[in-house]
Length: 93
Image (cartoon, rainbow, N blue to C red):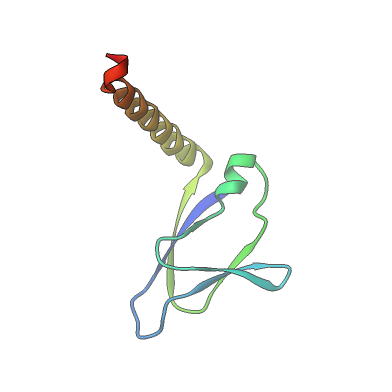
């Protein structure tokens, strides 16, 4: 089952870092609050990369159903905001 994961590093004296690894090569660096795995959820495919942490890290995950619910709510809110902006735009009144 695919999940979206959120990275939250534990506080310590070392700069918190997680790396995205593809084919044994570091391709990105993730900081606190970063997410990964969203494309796998959107496209219903396995993740294309792995994550390796070098400091203690908390991971939170969302399954596809929860992710889709949040995404739909976000899209609806964005649409409502656009409509409100246009309704308050003088030439459209």
